[in-house]
Amino acid sequence: MTPRQQQILHAIVETHAKSTEPVGSLTLSEKFETSSATIRAEMAELERLGLIMQPHISAGRVPTDKGYRAYVNALEPSHADRRHEQALAQRIKSAGEIDRAIKNAVESLAHVTSNLGLGTIGHNLYLSGMASLFQQPEFASGARAYEVARLLDSLEEWLEEAAPNAPISCYIGTENPIGRSSGATLIISRFESPYSARSYIGVLGPTRQNYGPVMGLVQYTGKLLEEALN
Image (cartoon, rainbow, N blue to C red; front, side, top):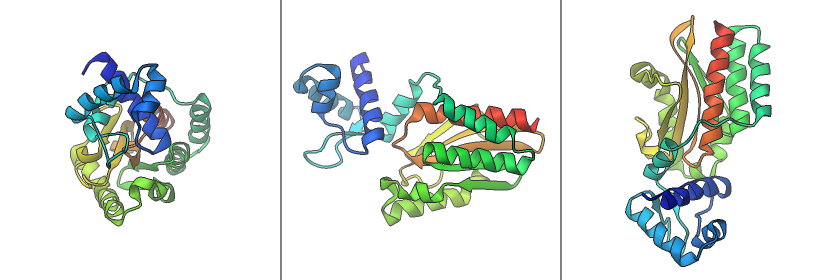
C-alpha cells in the first residue's frame, strides 16, 4: 500500500464512521483535491488488496475487517476530548468504593462513546449502554444481534482464559473469538487491581468506530481505575 493509498483508506474509515454510509470517489476527490478517476483507481487497488469493499452496486466503499486492522495498526496514540477525560476522572475518583468506581467508569464510557461499556473485576461483570449498542444500524438484523449476544454471554470466561495483557487490545469483527460474524469490535484494557489478577475495562460496538479517541479513552480509564483501586 502506497502512502496515498493509506491516506485514502484512513479517510474512508473516518468518513464512514461519521456518516454510516459508503464513501464515494467524489467525496474523496474533494478532500484530496484530485480527480475522481484518480481516486477510483486507488480505491480499486485498495479493494484488490481486500482493505475496502463495495456493499452493493453503484455504492461507494466501506472498510473490511482487514482494512480496519491496517488503519488501527497505523494509529498514533490519541487523546479524546479533554472534557471527557476530566469527567471520567471526576466520576471515578469521587466514587468512594470499588463497586461504584467500576460502575461509574463503565457508565461513563458507554455514554461518551455510544458503545456498550463493560468492566470485569474478580468474577463480577459490569455492563452499561445495551440500548445504545442495539440502536446502531449495524445491529438492526436479528442475526447480528444474536452474534453480539453470544459474544457477551461468553465474554467473562473468554477474558479469563485468553488474558489479553496489552495496555489496549482491539478485536475487530472476525478477530473476535466468539460472535465472529457480528460486525462488532471489542476494545479492552487490562488494569492492575488488588482485588483480581485480571481486571478489564472496555467497550463493545460496531466495527465502524472512531478508533483513535475511543482507544485513548479506554486506556485512560484503565489507568484511572488502577490509581483509584491501588
